[in-house]
Length: 266
Image 1 (spheres, one colour):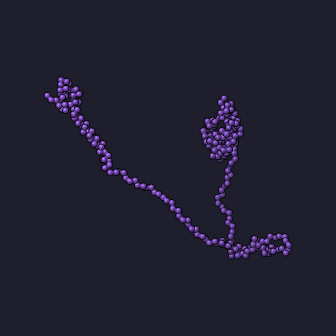
Image 2 (cartoon, one colour):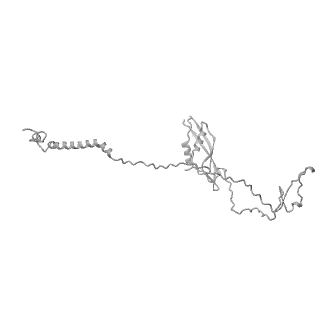
Image 3 (cartoon, rainbow, N blue to C red):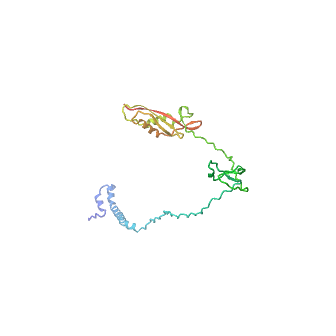
């Protein structure tokens, strides 16, 4: 008997007398169909991979042309306007006085031949004004009267109090936000003690708490050297604003003193 290995006849010979329900028999029996399916599917995938660039090139380009919507503004320099040249017009002459005005000549002691103009007589000054020159009056002229003093509201001028008060006699003392203990803690945390062995002592500093709570006029009354005073000034300059002091219900400037105890590591 001629055996064709392409067909599944050889399976029956190999598995004769054996359990055909076993998975190996079923796998070998369906192996041909699986091989054909795999070959067809692989051919399709390979064909698509080869033809993909051609398909992509045939598709229409969907990108729209970008439209430039930027608005460009150009500045145009206009020619300067021509100013109209007004002719020089002299001011109108003042109206003549209602009463005649007589020039007053200051009497000067001089020789008789040096007198150029005699002073007016008493009769000439009657019912007339005295001025620097003689002007003929006009009885029909409008009499100008000085305007009376207005009766508008009077603005009271209050002089600003810029005196520096002492904390001992002030009604409301200036205060650091959170209390004076917070101020001492702020100075302690920010003050950098010089690295000098055995350095100890006190630095006395004064400053003015202004009406807006800022610290000004910072002065070192006494330090112990090694830049201790300059460091105290640096710390106070970066201090937050205080609540200002008050006197008679108004904010005032108050002088404050601060002792700083220095104790370096032994």
